[in-house]
Length: 350
Image 1 (cartoon, rainbow, N blue to C red):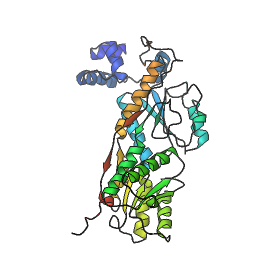
Image 2: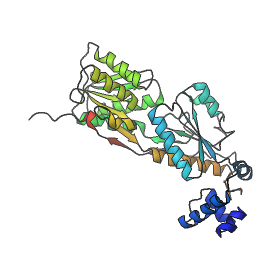
Image 3: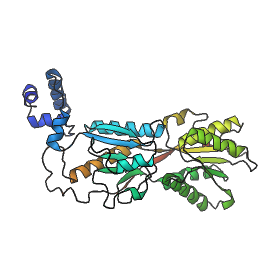
């Protein structure tokens, strides 16, 4: 760094700030230092930096499935937000397996990362040590294995309520909730569904909850085909607990000759990229993944600093002991309803 500083005509501290991703460096200075880095062939020695600072410069992101569009988009948002902080993201796919999730809660990724962002699917509270994990950890999404762990995600109940209220405003009354599966996500979305129907005075006989094994296109398709082939009256709307289920539902409705949204309106959750390109385009609840990523990384960094690892090689002034309770609060992030053709019912004839 001394060589680079001399070449660029700046201080060693400025070079350190640039290579560490420190934000308060002017664009002109950052560009000058980067030119010197490139010309001199300087490369960061991450092992040396880790030995000095106590940090590796890596964080781990654990999600259930990378093949599902929502988790792929979440991973991309985290990677981009981390890059702005000079952090590299290591991605782990758990498959929703409880044993894999338990190993992560026990610190199974901290041998290679400073902290963990964790979107759990099945891990129960019993898998969390009574005192909490002894490493920086932030939960992502609605499934939080313990109230004292920090979590970043949308208000799941409010999001579901917003989706169902939109369907009610379109005149729908026999609304199917597609996605009950015993998960915390499913419980919360069912709660929002029920709150909206109750507030609208919809009779309980029309509270239609359809269970599924997994939130996939295949299960959405199979469940809706089975529903349409039954002897009961046709629902006038489907609230799918995620967009993958909704995409499967749209395919099943089309295969059965049911017109969307004229006969059955459909709304999903997640606003995955393909939702704008389904037939018809899918109305969906859109979480702000960029905000989720930024806030989660901020909470993770706060935990790391509170544990006494500043990333600069110097002890944080006034930082608490590593045994201190540095688990921060949960944060609800914004969401919005993106209305497309799948839920816009035609106005009744005058």
